Image (tube, rainbow, N blue to C red; front, side, top):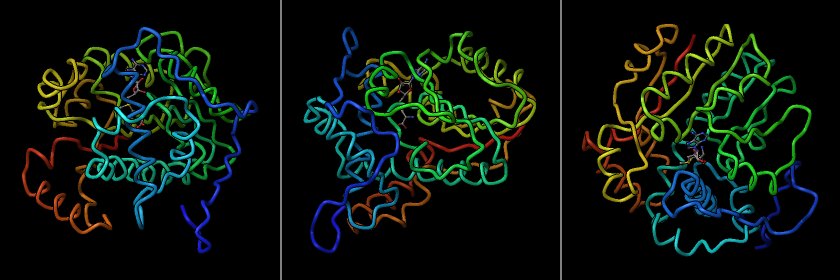
Amino acid sequence: MNDASGEEEVVTNPHDPVSGHPAKVDFTGVRWKSVEWTMLCMLYLRACESRVPHPILGDHFAAQDVARIDYDFRRIHRYVRPATNQFAVALRSAQFDAWITDYLNGHPEAVVLHLGCGLHSRPFRIAAPEGVQWFDVDLPQVIALRRQLYSESETYRMVGSSVTDPGWLDELPAGGPVLIVAEGLLMYLTPAEVTDLLHRILDRFDTGELVADLLSKLGPRLSKVSMSGIIKWGTRDGGEITRWDARLRLIEDSPVLAGFDKISLAPQRLLYRLAYAVPANRNYDRLFRFAF
Ligand SMILES: C[S@@+](CC[C@H](N)C(=O)[O-])C[C@H]1O[C@@H](n2cnc3c(N)ncnc32)[C@H](O)[C@@H]1O
């Protein structure tokens, strides 16, 4: 972000790592368009969005992280087409932030399970109450990279494990309240894996909320064409989740694109307005908030 003097404003991140070296992306054996790779796309889009006038999310940590990661983002730039897609990602993250902040304000001692966290700066961007214990969980290679960008603290920890592995939960506090955050994650799991994951978490905590986005059935179909089939599950029906675990009840849902009016650039706002008018686009990615 530029301040009045035109200088790049430096955003202080209390979790900066000690080394100061660029983070190395060690994705040995990880394919282009793999699930681990998707989080670089999300990071890059948030970084781009932080530079538009009057951003919706304005994630300046993302911009700093892109600059700190030793990776050629030009190919990602061509693939993700930030001019339009940055706003969908910003709208999605901003709504997650709003629901998370709302929950944590009412539950200042909560445990947060930020599943499939990728390189989200959310734990540092959101001013969580001091009593909150935050756990960022993602696949081991992603967490290895994350550890080069952020450090742990008494209230912030990173867990390198697949969420489908039953072991990772055993080390964590139990009881509740808990906030389960799954942004851009559940579509990469099969319905059986999602069901099992939810059962295990809900067995461990007495009360809490789940915030998640779900892709429509178009998601897995499109992914076969353009993303090597990495999207495994699509539904438009949040009720499917409540049928899998009857302890969950749906309290709110909305399309990711619902806030398109907040886009400051007129051509992109118009494009989103048109996309929103078409049900298949409007309902492609929807946000759901459940309580238990
Ligand atoms: C589209 S990215 C979203 C990342 C982050 N939530 C964001 O919004 O920037 C999907 C993330 O889910 C993670 N993921 C996919 N399958 C996973 C699994 N089985 N266990 C843990 N993380 C997983 C990927 O590594 C990746 O970081």
